[in-house]
Structures are given as structure tokens and as C-alpha cells.
Amino acid sequence: MLIIGCDYHPSVQQIAWVDTETGECGERRLTHSGGEAEQFYRELKKKGISVRVGMEATGHSRWFERLSGADSSQAGAQAEERPAGCRASSQADAGK
Image (cartoon, rainbow, N blue to C red; front, side):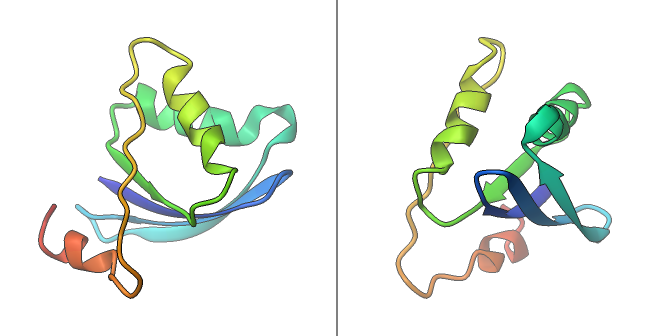
């Protein structure tokens, strides 16, 4: 599974990711113009890679919801609400 942290801006996304199976990690800047960001996530889906995206709760989260609902074969987005101070890594450490 890829866990992706996303700093979303109207024109770009800055992402940091970790592959929970291999430990590989990295960072990347994805632009929205020309569809680079959308293509990135669609390619992961096409390859059958399981992904969890974390981002702050803003109006921009609707972009991911639209992307996941754009194709009827794709599963809908799942949102998790976490109390302040809850560490996202604790779920990854637990193998979930």
C-alpha cells in the first residue's frame, strides 16, 4: 500500500509517500494543469496499487472525491475523522 501525504493547492500538489511493503519513500510535485496529478492517481489505480491519501480537511478534498467517483468501476473515497493529536502512523505501524 502507498500512503501519500498531500499538500493540496489549486495549481499543484506536493506529495510525500511511503510504500508500506518495501519502505521506499519519496516526494513529488504534481501540477493540475495538463492533468498530471489526475493521471498520477489514475495510473496507481490502473496498476492495482492500494493507496491511502492523507490531507487536511479543506474544500480541496472534493477534488479527490470527484476523481474517485469519476469512473463507476472505482470505489468511492473514504474519509476518516481523527481527533486532534492522533498519529496517522499508528495505524500504519499496526499493519492496517
